[in-house]
Length: 353
Ligand SMILES: *[C@@H]1O[C@H](CO)[C@@H](O)[C@H](O)[C@H]1NC(C)=O
Ligand SMILES: *[C@@H]1O[C@H](CO)[C@@H](O)[C@H](O)[C@H]1NC(C)=O
Ligand SMILES: *[C@@H]1O[C@H](CO)[C@@H](O)[C@H](O)[C@H]1NC(C)=O
Ligand SMILES: *[C@@H]1O[C@H](CO)[C@@H](O)[C@H](O)[C@H]1NC(C)=O
Ligand SMILES: *[C@@H]1O[C@H](CO)[C@@H](O)[C@H](O)[C@H]1NC(C)=O
Ligand SMILES: *[C@@H]1O[C@H](CO)[C@@H](O)[C@H](O)[C@H]1NC(C)=O
Image (tube, rainbow, N blue to C red; front, side, top):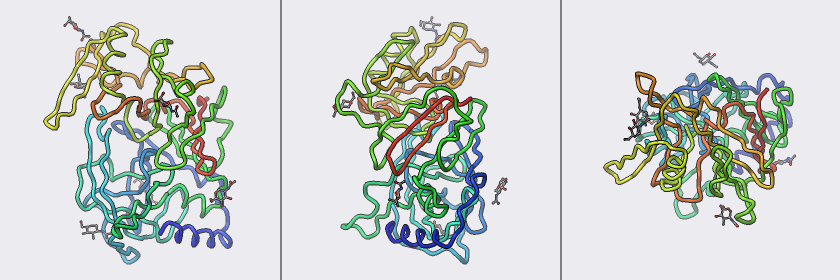
């Protein structure tokens, strides 16, 4: 299914004209941990969360109305998301069926784009999600003709606009405004060195490592803590790691632990600290470089008590995360230009000016 769609869009490209760079920039804004942009399908205009951690475009239950250009497929999927609330604790499960429809994104018209129509699901922020992960490793299932993982919105835009290599950047600022920019890194928006990491080509933006020693490192206040496998995912609201590692990391910087176990047996831990002390700084380094890329200090605070005295750090430890996997969510993206290359399977980043 995806191969057919890719072929027909390549054909359109031969006769279409390449869009000007200015039309391929999408303004984004932060709301309760998620970054939203406009996505138009048929006559409807939706505000969807940009999510580099998932693949498909899906619209919240009951929101996507049929129109003369929409065609049902009877193919779809069931997905479970973690990190579905601002503090990262909530999970969301969604069942959806794809509809082929005329869509518009980044000033580009896409015909017969696969849009997921959620028919049964937990509430999501905004009107739904638009996925920007690398392609799903399983797009269709030979044993299940009803299974379909969807279509890459980024690849569809690149094909239509002749953007090759196919790449896009996220520039998420610390003031809650940002952009999704198709094409190469806009060098006028960055300062300092660009770090480029080879990533796995499917499913998620996860840097590859040959040995443990060359894998990413969690660093707290300048001290390397442990080697990890990071998943770069701007659609996760904060930094999420395994329960035990986060618990000991929070204790090591003198934070109090705030632990909970819900009715499904999922345990989580947060750290609280006196807002008047200098907060601990959490960051990551990527060997062989020893440079530490810290989370912006402002994004490091989840909330404060009404009297402004007790702060909760914006890092979640959960029993659903398995070491050495960590999710590097949008708080780390803030203040950076993060570039995603679907052709070369690289993720690159630099500080915003
Ligand atoms: C979608 O809605 C937003 C907010 O109301 C508006 O700014 C934007 O122009 C609309 N886009 C389209 C294509 O209708
Ligand atoms: C989406 O699914 C609902 C049923 O849950 C259906 O009423 C609606 O027509 C569907 N939308 C489209 C565009 O097919
Ligand atoms: C990127 O990948 C597409 C599709 O696989 C291919 O057609 C194109 O030539 C590639 N571009 C570059 C610069 O590698
Ligand atoms: C990659 O790094 C992780 C985390 O350090 C480690 O657990 C894993 O064994 C490494 N993979 C290889 C192939 O060495
Ligand atoms: C940390 O726990 C201690 C002992 O229970 C308590 O006195 C202190 O107020 C707590 N501080 C914060 C910031 O939660
Ligand atoms: C801060 O967030 C944590 C995690 O969601 C929550 O348990 C706590 O009650 C919140 N505190 C305040 C003061 O809102």
